Image 1 (cartoon, one colour):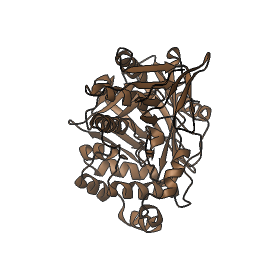
Image 2: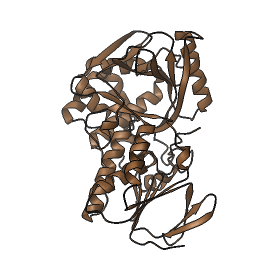
Image 3: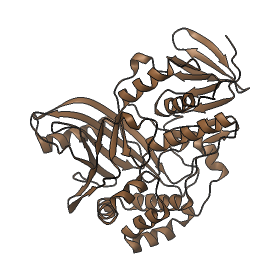
Image 4: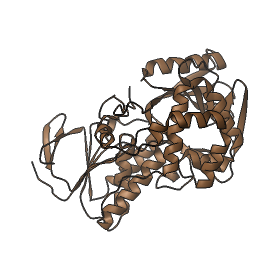
Length: 410
């Protein structure tokens, strides 16, 4: 086995790992070896998900968006609202386009090695063995810095009894219909035409054409739910709304994103940084992570090229407070979610709404969203949740951050 000091090691060639590798090769003055280790073989990559969100800031992958919508809908049994922005769009990127784009660039760059079908074995001295799942050990590395995007386990953050944990879980079916069914110009971000009970449940629809769309059943719940149950709910919705034989499934996707009030430290040691969902990059109140992952990658690449220390990604103090109060309110009042989201959609300027959702909002944007919310219930919740939003990051949150995980495959 060969030793390769001075390298950058990335565990995982998913969204976050590929994003970081791509941002590193964009830096022309970055000359160190980049080693990426991925347990999947190249043939095991499929078009298994879409990444969607508001395009409030350009990023390295903006050109990959397959569909954009400048209008979006929130729908409840008591009314609906359609918002429109000429400045920002809601965009969707297919994973197959993302993977192909990244691999085409990375495999042609002499600074990059990608080891498919391999796993990492940690050593006590900070080195790693790259082990091929079929043939055994093939590399021994002691990198300058280790970037870890691997899910650690299925447990969620539980270091502080006051913290709130909601899992945003979804199962999507891409469908084709036999006749014109969908409205291509409008993305339905939330349709609460499903039962709620003890959780927040809604339908999410991205129409790619009049006869093709991604339809997802989504639930916010403190416990994880089997993906097969969510898929059954999505199929029941499709059969109820569109009939038994008017559509066919052409693709599937599943996802699970933690929405937590705890602050997750991405730098777990001097030479180790967690990236992606398990590094705390998902927006706590919305679950959006794609854009923030790329911004984090850009900042890391700049730091490595300049030789300065890598810092934790910072979120504004006001954003943290709002996210924590908002999550606490939703966890206690899931039955009020549809009314709350409709109200925010109706009373917030679409451009401000988009920036707030993607955590690129100004102080005025945040104040506008606050003004759209029911005042008294949130003032009361702010008082009851003061142990959450007054707390700054604790030592335990750094330790417990290892326990936070995303499991995006069933």
